[in-house]
Length: 178
Image 1: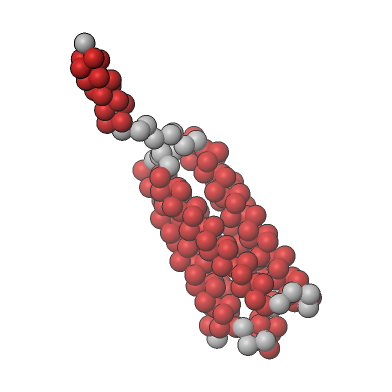
Image 2 (image 1 turned 90 degrees about the horizontal axis):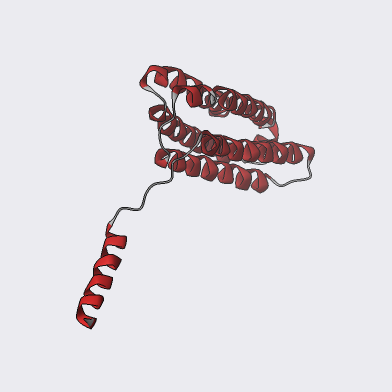
């Protein structure tokens, strides 16, 4: 009897671990949380650029904040890649967060372009260019992660919206490439 009980316990334990762990369904809020995290860091970088131009922050602080932005975007792209696909209704609800993020990035790029004389004077223009290029690469990764998560009928729109983020960063790259 002990042998049968031990075998039954072992069989039940094996079956419990042999079944795949169910993947948690990701809701729209998980997607919007990714955009919120990126927006928050964009605000931090913007504030750091303003402090740098005002003379109260070192250029290295801008670089550190920019590097953190790249990390957050890359982490967001990785997270999105693991999320379940969105329904049409949920996908349409991402339009506003993507547009808001694009607007925030546009403001950041404007500030970085306006600060170019400061970065040039401090010998940091090359570092800024590299940061912008890293941000562009990360934004492209986010775009490429989001696009397949929406229904096929909306993928062109999703890609175009997310491309707006990349386009804004390219403006900064163009300004620092001269």
